[in-house]
Amino acid sequence: MDVQSVMMEYLSRVQLLQRLPSSSLYKLAQLILVKHYEKGEYVFKRHAENAHGDGAYFIFQGQADACAADDSGNQLQFKKYDYFAHGLFNKLQLVDVIASTKLTCLVLPLQHCTLLHPKSIWSADKTVDQCSLVERIMHIDPIKVDIFRGITLPDTPILIFGKVFGGQIMGQALAAASKTVGCFKLVHSLHVYYMLSGDVKKPITYEVQRVHDGKSFATRSINAIQKGRVIFTMLASFHKEEEGFAHQEVTMPSVPDPETLLSLEELRERYLRDPRLLDPRLPRHYRNKVSSRTFVPWPIEMKFCEPYYLTDQTKDPPRLIYWFRAKGKLSDDQALHRCIVTYASDLVFAAVSVYPHRRRVLRISCVSLDHSMWFHRTVKADEWLLFVITSPCSDNGRGFVTGQMFNRKGQIVVSLTQETLIREVKVPNPAQVSKL
Image (tube, rainbow, N blue to C red; front, side, top):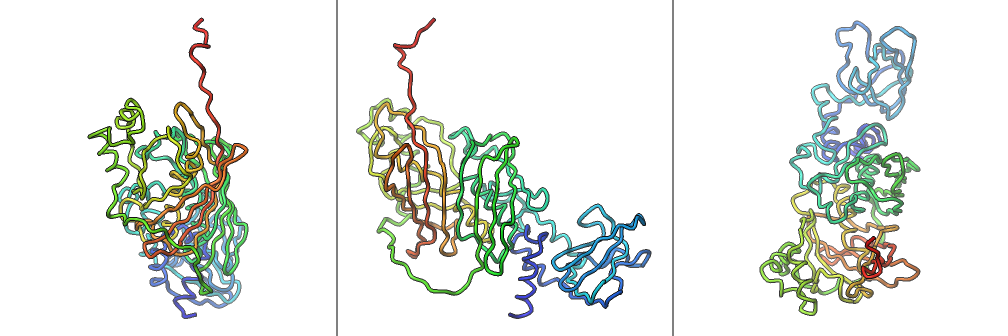
């Protein structure tokens, strides 16, 4: 491993730096200076001309002791992966910092310490407002070590649900976990359980537990908390990419290219112009209702490979195939792309298990129970991906769906499963309801 790789590997393990965009970390590795100190030598010294030091210090080898500025005698000990700088990271003003062993520090010069405060968690160059909508949805604010906060943006399509979209919680929870492992380890599998609905008007706190940190793998447990209650939990495993055996038995279905298909928005525009373009089997009043319904565009572009009638009134086989991609250009961070694919995976996934049971007048409640994903290859969420969904069975009030995502080359990039609670909504008979 060359010096640059060793530097990057070290920096990715520093907790403070794990929150940074991967692009910031690469910049840091190019700007870092290496400084050596003998045992007993000062790093900071009270009343010295350079008492504030040369910038941000990261312990690479050895240990150092520090004393508080108030002469209270309080001491801190720094070891490998710890960091310090006068007034940059905490309220404690460091004065005398002394090497207690032979010490090697990586020093980020003071003039470059702005890199430690990026404009967004996904990009060192763009502010959050300059990012695409779905990237802004995936933005979370670090509160303190391993605790993050996410919100539901006012311009997201929340009116469809009236509650926080499950894909948003999954994506934000994965973002929180990704910001505790560094850029070299990427999520390869995740498993989630939904317990309670989220309130769109309240922020969600994501608490991350570092279950395991190894050379190749890391495991994180994430709880989404709102109003003091856990509403969602995720267990995610991260893997450092490596060479290995590869094969693929599954074949991508033969479908039209996305460029030849109409998007969901374009389909609706056609319906607005002529409601008869809806499935003619449907009653006219229903077609008119669908064509005039308030529509909130998703931050994900979707193109269905088979006729999709936006109806819950006719039975269909339990399968669905469509192309999708994020709208707008995303920041070049693979962790972000996997968060957005996770977000998009929940859009119409579970609903496929209801297709064989739909009929006129029937009202169905469909609530996600759990969701699992496996990432097989690098994925680009702002390039077209084919989502193939089937529902092998539904029973005992639960529907089960499986999915596969393919890139344009026909490579399978993600495998998924989800279980959902399906219940018929009983509508009171008006003739039997007393008006008194």
